[in-house]
Image 1 (cartoon, rainbow, N blue to C red):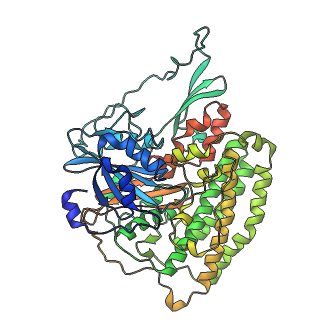
Image 2: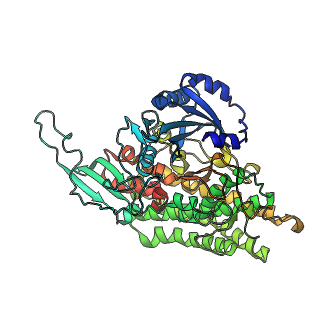
Image 3: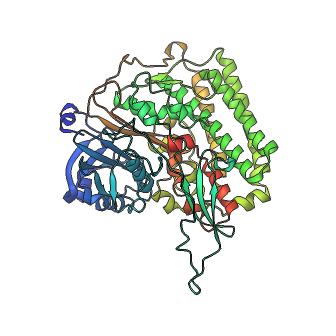
Length: 561
């Protein structure tokens, strides 16, 4: 933050139990040039040539082994990168590393040598903001074409400048390195473009794939085809009314209500807005209905990818998803773009007659075990399905952590990390439910985690219904009193996240004293979860690559944002 903003912001972060920021500062003291207080955690300002040492120390000696996100931004006097760190073992333990650089030389050391997930995050920061990351292994554009001129989030970017995107003839990008030692002859490799318009890529995703026979020798995801400037649109919108409709459009599978919650959680903490307990129960119930809907779609499309059976696998899951969407439509009035949350609560109460609404949900929940048994009969117990998914797309727990993987993909690799439990929000901490994990780390384990999570979501929903049924009518407060126009104090910074169906969906906001955010950064789980695809696919069959893509359950609107 700038000097002026430091004077205007006097909010102190409350350190969670077990975090001693003075001790942390002592570990990296020789590199620290300043210390800031962000609303979610303390932030240490470090020199640009000490990024690797600082991140390595915080990871190895302080236990901050999860790089959630990297936020890049430009001020009037400098550029800045923020590394948002937390712990997989305790998500409430957070710390930020701020790296300022001068405007005439926006460059500093990369963090990708410590956290592999920094690779894609820093490429996006370079692409959109223009910060150079020294010694980065592959610093090039990631969302925009390589021929693009300028960086769209920089202050001097010329929006009217015409752009010419040239077409290049593709060739095998690793043909020079694939040699047989004895004869120095080229291996029989083939460069294959998969996508961007292909049903197996689950959206406009281009996979630059090198095959050695039928084995994957190299694969590189090429993203950016669906970049819609969602962060910039939020920066042009007001906190109170205009931002909330946008999150529905990030992951439209639909995970819209949980997307809305990510923004609501950040903005409510920023503006010190308390959400009524009754509204928290409604939020929790609707969020878990959304999770079931999203997981049903993941199961449906994954089964279609593997089995190729549209009638049974796909339509069974879509049939059950349709019931959930009907329930959410009764609640919100919409089937995809819900816009149901409001800062301080929800837009309206449960539909009347309430008894019929509850009965409709209970009927669905009562039939869910039988439905899940059908999925197991069709999918998990199918020999062909097992051959295609067991021991394919393997992701080791340490690799998952190194890439910042979260959600069902991380939990399928044995990483016991779930923000609903580890960084409680809503009404989750008052309910009885379990975090689902598996040890397989393969495509099969990811399916099983999602199907078991549907069962846990059903348990949460049923408990919420019991609570809502008994809630006194005269105490049903759906929204707290929120000012018509929100103008948080200037210089405040916050990172908050929720457990979306695909993993950690985080929002960073910086304020400048106006009713619009000065910086709005989205940490999409699909973006992060896609980045280690080569770790899961190299050396496997091309058919296994298709299965692995399906198991990731990515949505390209969230990857590109």
